[in-house]
Length: 319
Image (cartoon, rainbow, N blue to C red):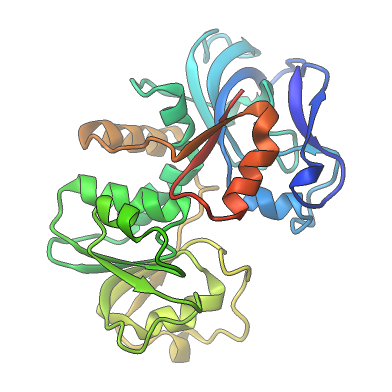
């Protein structure tokens, strides 16, 4: 089969379109024919060598959508059945979705019933699952002021779409480092655009918000909390700021009184939560169309495109 193999860390040029042996089904595992996958920032970090636990050579890819090709659990899966998979050390401890076929642990495969096209379905798993987890954590109420830091990211766009599709009357602001995507953001329903040349710091006049989604991550957390209204919730999910942890964080001093700090890990995934996401997408007619689609042989170009921040939303690959 064809796959994208990384033999050593580096830039997009290390993503090599190669012939590799077809994985063989073994007890507890199922072979999935990959119909699509999204490109994620964590895969860029891994490709660059920023994931110490990952050993090369490796086929990257923390998610995939496709159909059952061969299974060790015929009582659980049917050949041809549509499934999604994400996380669980996929593309890290074992080969991931950047391939025509992927061998996955049975407990990490989730059958779905959906009318979405393959490009649309490929845009959902990691990005919209994360966005939906964030959305639920905020306990949104009509009339609230919401801020999305790094709104032009894949998760930022996804959570904006979820909030607008929900029908709740929310006032939604978002941060971006330039004005190149202002028109597109307005078309998605963003009310206020805050330009932040320094992504880690909001302008002094940015005001307070009832709910804040911080996709910059640890490098911006303290600044985020300063702009959170009393009894508000800040969800810090993502590391777009390039920092993984918060040094010398003191909850008593760094979290202002009567504010709440949470996060969401997409490692916490199960069939019930996956089905809840797809039910929400169907019920609220959420637009999950990807921003740009590449072929498997073009995966390097997909990484380059995402790194250049040229687009708005999800970048997917269809083998």
